Length: 388
Image (cartoon, rainbow, N blue to C red; front, side, top):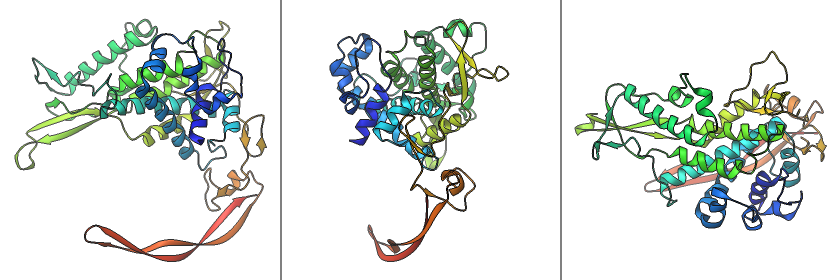
């Protein structure tokens, strides 16, 4: 139930003009109500809601995935990405760093979940990306680093020309090699495109359709910041792709090497977004009313890969219903740490309570053939510090 509440908050927390949804209504408790109650939906988003329950399920799974990782990445910070409905709803109604991270991680989560569903064959409209695997009448395509880069550049250019507004205009006449190709390490010599490459472009596209389509015609700063962070989350997935290879040959030799593109573990993606959270840029609206710029003019314009925000964050030390802060009272802290989980930082210099607890834990575990592990129970003492 808590995850369903979180999902709904992500999708509905910001007021939507023209749909008549009241803030705080019961629609926050069920994300599927967006599809059931919204008769004005048009285009691909309407198709997903009305005719593609399997894809909608993966989208919901992706939002859940994003929130679970958000809680993990911030578990030792003052703001711990709590899934409490009232708190998260208030967070998402503003444009702080925290809001930007939530939007980015959930957008990345949807991209990841939909892409993985394609690879596993769980969606009838997509499968692995085999665009490079076979050429010349179905014969294996042998490539090297140079020809593989050229093929990936052509594919990405074609995708962005179709799916990204004004990309061709902005990039005309420039070398626009993306981070995807910079991050992939190609093997030496010739190898064969094969295996089951993750169809990340399909996941990217449907994450954008579901999370962005209702906001594209709006040009206020809040909308621009939200769409920017949504895209940054998706780009983090796409640009984290790696090349995996398998050798074929007698007696373990590597006569032929087959390679394919694969997404990294989502925890790695979330960690990259957390680093972007720490470096996020505060922005203000330009005089033209259609774009934004850094609040401090001397700072560099944030790229499409960076996270941005327009509101300052509360300190999250004390409970505050207006900002969504639940405070840090009773949070467990580390008295010897110098990082964000230290008692000094996490407890906001209020002090902390120290106690020793006894716990029964598994110990002296033995593996027995085959296939059983037996353990004894031992009583261990553990020191616990909690914020006052």
